[in-house]
Image (tube, rainbow, N blue to C red; front, side):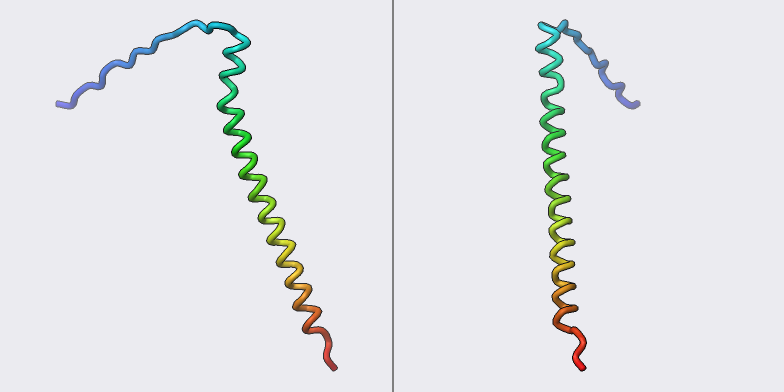
Length: 69
């Protein structure tokens, strides 16, 4: 016979101060959002840089292999 899981007991505490609690409640998510935004920004910058370098290389190849008659 399968063992039944124990009941989970949740204790509810009243907030010490509403302004302090609301500010602290969003701080970890703000940090996570900023970290994620930083990573996304760096990735976008990398992709833009690579596109620009690829375009420069393409133009350099076209200039070297110009019409030779």
